[in-house]
Image 1 (cartoon, rainbow, N blue to C red):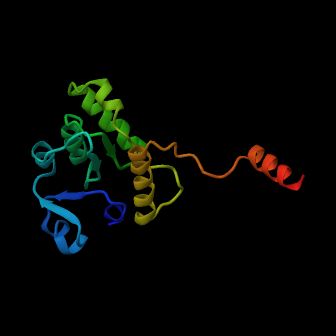
Image 2 (cartoon, helix red, strand yellow):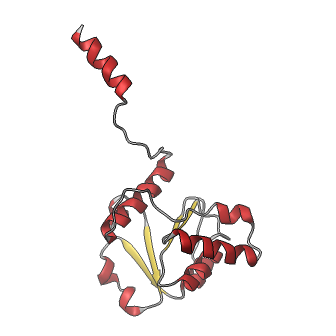
Length: 157
C-alpha cells in the first residue's frame, strides 16, 4: 500500500487465494493469482521495473529469484536474513547463474533503519527502492557540524 502511495505501479503475485484478493490490497494495486516463478517469466518486466521477492519460504524465494535475475529489471531485491541470502546465492551459483547476476541482487533488501514490525520493514524496503529510483545516497540530510558551525558563525558576525 505504501508503494502505491509513493506512485509505484504495484503488482502483487501470489498463488494462494487468501493472499491474492483485490480486497486485501485495495485500489491501485494489481493482483495476479498464479505461480510466482511462472509470473516472473510471463509478466513484462523491463528496465524501469523493481522486483521484490518476499515469499513464504526459502525454496520458493530461490525459485523466484532464479527467474527474476533473468529479467531486465532495474532492481531485484530479496527480503530475508543474511543467512537466507547466502544460502540462496550458493544455490543459484551451483545452478550456473553468473556471479555478476547474483551480485546484482539487493539482498537482504532494505536500508538499516532499525525497525522490526512489518510496517517498519516495508518503510526500509521502500526507502531503498526510492534511493535506487532517484539516485539518492541514503545518507541523512542533516547538516554536518562543520557546515552548521560556519553558518552560525557567519550569522553571528
